[in-house]
Image (cartoon, rainbow, N blue to C red):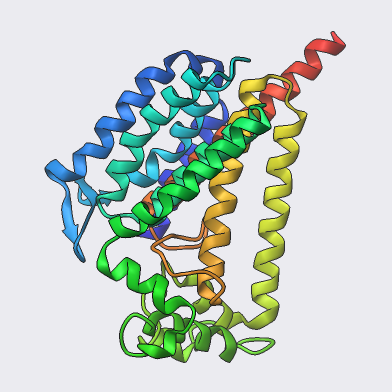
Length: 322
């Protein structure tokens, strides 16, 4: 299945890497409406899995709209903040149009994807050139909203936050996943137990070992050395993304590239952080490594778009030489 997903994702990567993104930016309002409608679909034709309505059936497979909309929401946000106006009217307009997107993802419920999309919006706002005073006011407003956000969480989500600091207060309940993940990471040692020989993962002590806790499974089988290699590969990838972003001259491509960077970096950091016990557990995949067609497809579309931005940058250089 995953090889099939990889083949499809490579096709989309190639398509978007050769796509002229100039074509997409003028259609950002339509893309926003399309994302909104796409996120409504799970509530109409979606399948319920473990109490969540995140997936819709398609040709024998299931796809997750909250994953697939991420790069397009980054494009929409970059288009919105391309101008030089940073009035309160524009800020409130952006918040007004962002809330329905965040709300539809949140009530699925999908806290992980909600936080990822939020990181895209916040990251682009922060780098758009907005005044520091307005940023501080927005930050203070966000702090005031936090208690309301906490109260709106599902019961199990609140318990995960509570038991994060001391999972041993409920070792067979909400603390179980975190305890097993840390045991898996620690038992890998320096060189690991070997591929396919992880006891925590293959004896099913570690839950979701192929998706949310893939890094713990990987650390157990490949050890500290393998986990470090993975981190170095991510470092190389994200430095390349930042290089593309800071070398492109057009403001909208700059903001768009950084929006994709925030999404990928945030998702990687949160997944690895929760696997090693540094962050609370939330349902979030590890880009390019976790099993799942929607996650892989979304990441490859994002990287294809970044490749298109890189080609745009190269085109600018050639044009200047000419």
